[in-house]
Image (tube, rainbow, N blue to C red; front, side):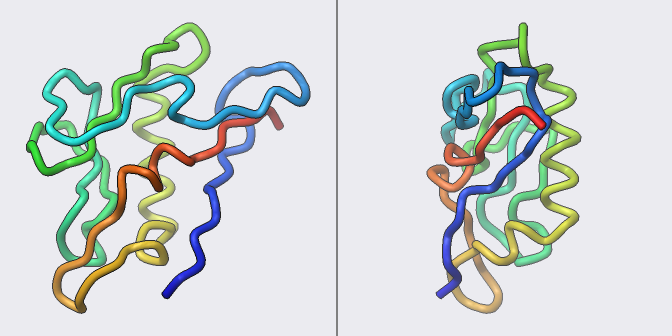
Length: 115
């Protein structure tokens, strides 16, 4: 089983030195969330899992940024696209060979910190 380390998105938000925060501090993250700004594919193939999408599905992980004064939803969407393309979610996905999933808690633990 892969070791689960928090993902560090240094420089994603402007914050004071030493003010480390998690994505869950600035956004609401949950499944069955039609009001979200965008969603992450929670379950599927290893290549598709964690992919950000703009179409609601109750099974996807919805992300709605509450603190738009420090984090823009579109910026986060493209940052999540980079995370997906870099293979981060493939390393964390659990399940069988044909069907894997990521956890809401993995998304909530993403660390946001200044450069």
